[in-house]
Image (cartoon, rainbow, N blue to C red; front, top):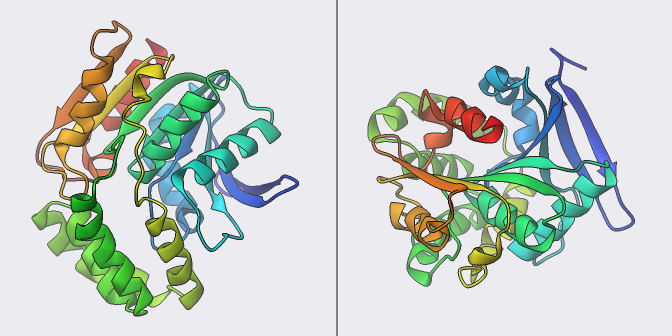
Length: 270
């Protein structure tokens, strides 16, 4: 335990997965983070700090990807494993938030395991990733990681995720983070990034049965703002689904918009 944060792991008969837990609320919130160069578990204090306003209402669980990755690992595989980890811990009626790749995983969990999910928030994500978007930033990241260029990967990642002024202010921090990246981290990143290729549940989105809030960014340089709107358009006839589009925060709006957690809390507690 550190600052009220529990770092632990869940083991099934197929895999082990790291997770963190913080907060003391009566409701269970599960976060599925996006693609990252190294494990988000390294930044547990920062994560818990970012979600501190929600910890009175929620016990928050954040799941990493499984520890030992197979050589190919699709979004469906990631969703199957994350759902298995959630079930292994006995969590139910969860308030599920997925950002970016985590949103893709969360959509599949909500579709395949509706009994687990009470409400769903999808941040900066897409129900399908066409070749144009995959062959842009994502393929460039894969090539940098395969070339073991950690600094180049971190800088490219930051430039795509953040608005220009935030990226310029963050360059030194990004370089410092890159210095701690291992070859195993980059090999893992390649597998996880390649898992996005061909992802498409656009024909299934209408089957999500729980209330959904879509939070997107008009200036998302990774997946595009249209991707968020496409998800909502399928669900827009339902009174329990809503959307809010930001401008000026880029793909990483989930980290940058000052009212983001407030919107999450309002929707989850509505």
